[in-house]
Length: 104
Image 1: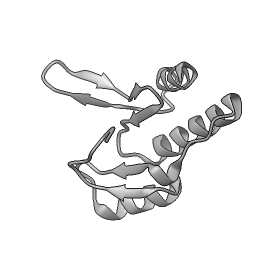
Image 2 (image 1 turned 90 degrees about the horizontal axis):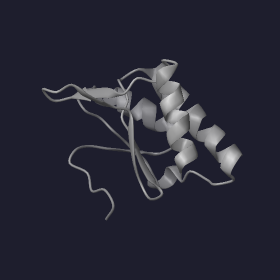
Image 3 (image 1 turned 180 degrees about the vertical axis):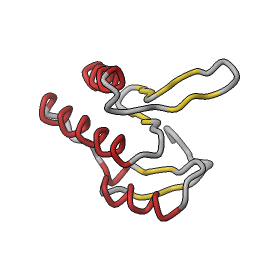
């Protein structure tokens, strides 16, 4: 999983993806990981979404592990629902809305 972390960090450095900023302290985050679970935070931009999918595909090829998109979901925060449907189709996963249950 450290390899996936490095791929996302490098993509962020190269401006291939852009995470989101939270709170008064302007904390910037593009992804978080716990064991074999990952949450990806992206600015609502199709290019960032496609680049994230490319990162996941490279990780699969390099590690031999598989991303289970059937267990994955796209969650909208402040975007129109039609965008979320299109993004979920791109990832071949389901769409969800807040609040969500993470890790059980």
